[in-house]
Length: 184
Ligand SMILES: Nc1nc2c(ncn2[C@@H]2O[C@H](COP(=O)(O)OP(=O)(O)OP(=O)(O)O)[C@@H](O)[C@H]2O)c(=O)[nH]1
Ligand SMILES: [Mg+2]
Image 1 (cartoon, protein in one colour):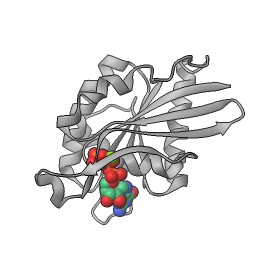
Image 2 (cartoon, helix red, strand yellow):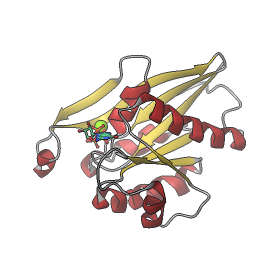
Image 3 (tube, protein in one colour):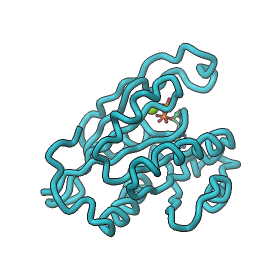
Image 4 (cartoon, protein in one colour):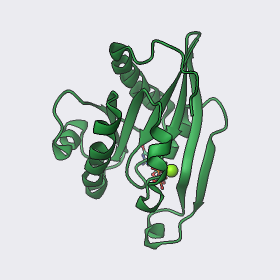
């Protein structure tokens, strides 16, 4: 049985908590608190430390999924949460230009440091005016070595598709061949 750690990160309100809640087979450990700053016009609650969920893929593979907070003031958690991750989902709100621009900073922070496969989830594809995965990729300025997958984070099948794409990349790296002794 392989147990591997996956990191889910992305800008404020991009859909990290929704994504993990959609697929986790255990009640998600969430740290959502009332928003107290000016962003409360966007949403009432925000992740302040982490989200944690688990998804069994098959008899051989269990994913432990860790989500980061999306607000800058809680970014001290990013390093802690990323230790030992074998793959990363960067989720962006495809209907929000600011989210996509902000996502560049996440790529620059995590990718050189972690050197692990990354899939970009172009979320909120159900919203009118959302950019296509190709357009999101252009705005992020990434080359075609990074996979961009359409996503609706509240839809379980859509999220599973994102995770399967990521895992295909992870398997090619061989990073997930051994069980991880310590997930956190
Ligand atoms: N229409 C639509 N709304 C979505 C989708 N995914 C998430 N949302 C909504 O977007 C808002 C933010 O979702 P969250 O899952 O809280 O986002 P987050 O990235 O965890 O937010 P922070 O932890 O505050 O950074 C919520 O109102 C969700 O219901 C989607 O695919 N489509
Ligand atoms: Mg959250």
